Image (tube, rainbow, N blue to C red; front, side, top):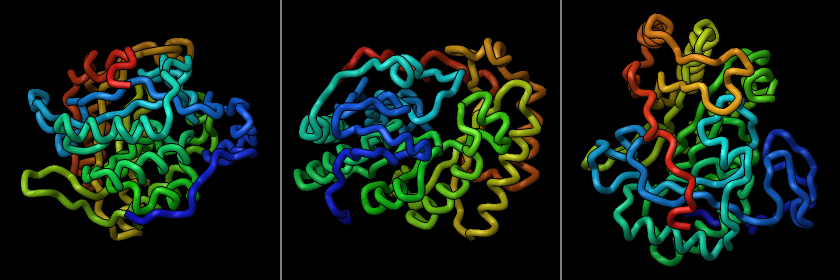
Length: 310
């Protein structure tokens, strides 16, 4: 891996597109909910990612997933809201985090899967460097909502092998309403283009597990079929303009968690709505990847944030 200049917690935080300016180094809390501590909520083998990451549900190995506390988005329907919005987590050191990475490898993880980690970018890079020096060989998956600065994506060049990124909205109005991030569409597109430049086309091992590349997830929301279709059109345009293939993952698992009902998202997506979205993906040729069954909204997608493995 390429080791860059050691990153420090900022006195004026610009790690995410909010650029809130919090003095994180002095313990001030940023928009994301993070201060000068590194908070982790769960570290365990996870079996509900895309099959090329975690295998079949009955696979004993799975993806070595580390859930970080806090988030740079405020999605009203977040299924992980206890950790993203309510601060559930345990403070640990980067050295302890490196040890967690190595334990997951020892437990048989197929990859190391870092979920919503950008608010801890300096500590995460430090932990990855230490773990690699101590024998970590797993491909590193960066599991992100897609709301990343170009600087953050570039800072992870050589540290991240697989980008597992969302592309949530094409409409700034929907992005503002549901995630308090009006600039999300432009930010997510620029970040995705940089991710593709860094990883190139998907690369698999002999068993068919992804070793390098980009997976782009889109969660279809109820009442937002047209925006989903526009998202897919945007992804098709990015693929055409960059010439770099990626895997798409079209998701039907929306469940009205957290404050969803308060924002008009108090139901699951209908079969008719999801079929419209799938049809658009097929029309655009976005068929290299995954499309969930309509019945895929399951409790397993939300693990218990009981600080297991931390």
